[in-house]
Amino acid sequence: MNKLKAVSEKHPVWFAVCFSITWFVFLFVIAGITSQAFGRPFEDPVTATIARVLLTIGVILLLRRCGWLRDAGITRVGKWWAWLLALGGFVYYAWASLYSLFGKIDMATADISAVPLIIFGSQFMVALSEEIAFRGLILYALMRAWKDSIRGTIGSVLLTSLLFAVLHFIQGFTLNISTVSLLVLQTAIVAIWWGALVQSGRSIWPVVLIHFFGNSIVGVQSLSMPLAEPVILAYRQLLWLSIPLGLLGLGLIYCKEKYPGGFIKRE
Image (tube, rainbow, N blue to C red; front, top):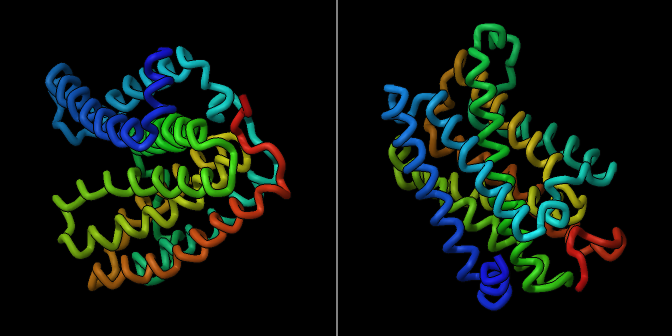
């Protein structure tokens, strides 16, 4: 583990990129193994959830071996104001997502009781696994290497957000390349907001929950309403409506001196 920590300090960008690729490959390999073991389709929610649980346990064990669990925000509840900011940002983003993707906000037409619990469990594991890997391990490793400064924090959050967003190119199997490109850019912008919340609030848990609820609300609404047409314009509108959150995240980082600490331990 000392060698891993040394690599993350000396070559933080290389470490972040390699870890992101490794995490993505392992996710698919484990999902493939569990798919064969349980005789279920590769994209089945049960298969995907089991794969993410196993992968998340592996990342948590890695964080524990490195002694990073607390400093990466895994075992911290976080600051109360970070939870309030997360709640406010979630309300805005939920509205922006439903309005952009469906043309209106009409959750009354969605029958939540008809949604299998495994779907919610799967969505929670998506949020948990991605936040622990990206806003947990990768973001902390970058900030540890680049120290607790505004420049280092912004660089860490931006790189983490970019790596996280690039993984969403996999949705090119269901969306055309232009729409996927908009989705990736929009995801990177929202991820800046999430990264700023984790860094300043000293915990990943507010972001885990808003990530989970945000995905769930869109998923539930999609069961009763089709996406607005044309889809590319829906994602373009969501991109524009996400920019205020990205700017708010950058502003939060810039003003971090007013909120002493961050979650980096000075050594």
